[in-house]
Length: 435
Image 1: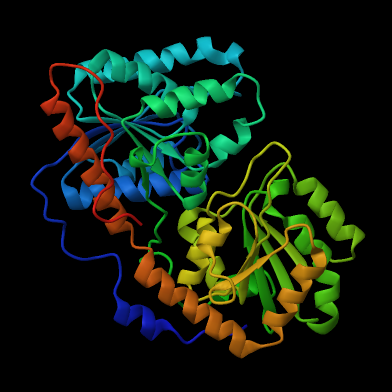
Image 2 (image 1 turned 120 degrees about the horizontal axis):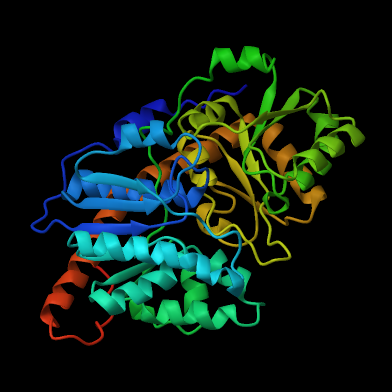
């Protein structure tokens, strides 16, 4: 496996550590979400990185209302403190049908109870239904400013439904501020008529204390028998829109010229049975390994193991789409070149031809050609990996994003106090720096 010699670049550029932000105004925030870590998912990692840094660097306080899930006790014991509290009581809705609305009432009452028991400066909602819908009602009852997150797929998935777009748009119109997690989300909000002055784009950052160049794990090399192999990696849920199928279809052509290539698939999901069957049909058993779910704190070891990362994301029939693709910038932070599908927000995570390649997610032929281009040219892999690392270090700092969210909240609170006589809050002006 190729070792990219960019550790010095990472070390000289610095890490996430540093002095705390200077702030004259701490916030007390209530955040409601169906799921929170340790639930797998980029949006949950996004929330935790934002809020943990706000608490640490801005002296803010946070209460998370969410649900219990496997591993929650261990996670909460590490993550919680006097400033960062996690209360697990919610039962997420199984789907977004109107028949599920009565089941949202307990969550509304839990949110109302929390807001009556303690003074909060701002209410944040991480999921559209039912949290953000409840958030609109809680804002009307209490006058506390409301911030709603948008990742973009909430809009594309609902577009073709009959009544839900009206509820969705009602929620977005009644939030004091909308945080778009990527350009795709911002463009989607603008497309459905949300005024631009209400939208604040805060793309995901990268935790460079966790994801940085390092030698591959000898234990993993031995476990998966990768000595002398070139390694291709995908880290993603096993669902159709992540594009595992097209990568497998491309492999036979690649293996003819790169016979020492091995494909590691990290993740689990409903598509696994179909993918295992396809591996057998294509006679790829010796070239593909399914490793199952990998804990988030171990993912960096798998990035370090590979020579290139791939996730050929695509828009599925239900409108679900990759709104950004944090895995691309995480892999870049470890110094690896990446390949993604030219769909959704991947074009924001990948700079075509510089930090990686964007491919037609329906073309196994194009995927194979890009893989051959990378694996037959070690210098190209190294140069693209180094460019990806340099971009992460200059453009994807979590602390700056946490400060932006803090500033949005401070502005909202100031406006709420200025209008203490009631009425609708004016939209918050975009902060000085958006990323």
